Image 1 (cartoon, helix red, strand yellow):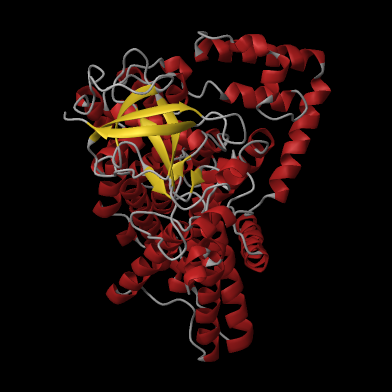
Image 2 (cartoon, rainbow, N blue to C red):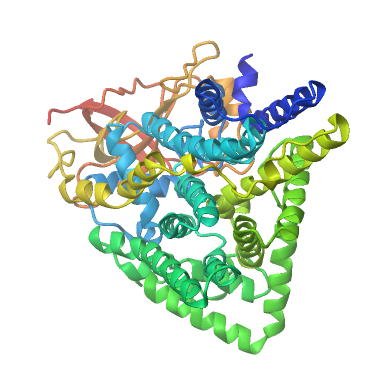
Length: 604
């Protein structure tokens, strides 16, 4: 039973698909329609199902001490995730965004809000992040169930749960892009059929925000502007007005990032500056975003602003294109082939992935055949936007680049499953559910105050709340070093251990705990993802080894953030301020980390 939960991310999507398949089978056996209208108890069951599918993989990582490339032991932020976590910790203390944080200010702001709500407790913050996502997924599933019933809604949850299963324990931008994209899809589905311009504009704004938070299929946005223009039953003046409103929504969504960056002390020009690296790699023949470092290391001299680096990279990109345009064609072709190979690849179990991809393909065919319907037209444009963006974004970060648009794929999967279920019911039981031919996509009651309030809540978590926190968040900082000194050769830092500076103790087998996370040594060393940085060094952990992400509360003479390793040392986690002495780790697989030499309490 324990291992079943530990590896929940590998089977949750398959279980959801199997549950939906069983429900359809029972309906056919009883010669009943697949569609059943939602009831109060049915919605409670759906909410429980969403909660389990989102939270089970998270607790599984903590129970088993499983390490992902960006979450060591399923908890400690690693690599890029550590960067975002450090950004949020600093912003909560009123420190202006540095160059790394300015690239993706949306998630830094969102993470700051959640971290502050959790009292700077990392594990509690991850749980809150997952609960916010579960709330958005429930609103999405509720809308789908109102149109097609529970079986179809359960299938729609499967791709979302599969993607979240490997990201919910991380502090990465995918978490914000996913929940914003899910809620955006609720508004887009309702607005496209009801022609309610307010719902449509809200959906487009949220989707723009999602694609800004986690850069992905950006071509979706201009293609959505075509949607009103392609509707046959509106006068041209009305179509143009609606398209103009959607354009304003896109501009507003794109403006949020630079505005946040400016308000938090950053340079608005640095927002998404590193996207230029991706473009250079594509135009150079599909080399990946790191290629620019090999070709033009001079761009990255210390002290050069991110905005200036981006301008230099774009200029170099243009030169490469003029000199060898065939490389751009080669890169775009390679990117599109990678996209085809990775469709829904975040669903881990191959038989389940084949089933879900079959539903997706069926949904695509159905959308093409019924493209005159407003909602099907909108979904077709989104799918086209994803496919045309893929040659550019497919090279880097695997399937993470599709976080903001996974809800669209989940909707297409739902359509495909509904088509297959309806066809099977008609052929076996002699009747169909009739829902595919109804004039509305979702019932009007699924568009209401709950969706609007939740959308506003998300926007506030990304905008006003972190700005307020950043402007007043100085309470945990220390202005000077304490009188306590460290041994010669050691450096000193002041850190609040537990909340503020997370601690991950490795314990003997049989002594592990899930909350707070303390993995057993066998699980921690034996369940390490092959792409975890410094994995060889981490596998050398023994019972009594403790990993810390030290966040220095004293900004002078320099602000220190580092990975600390304490061996056979009692590490407190009570949130009090401590003097932490450390020295460089010897050369080897953990080079760059620091050995904790002593920890002593101080008074505030």
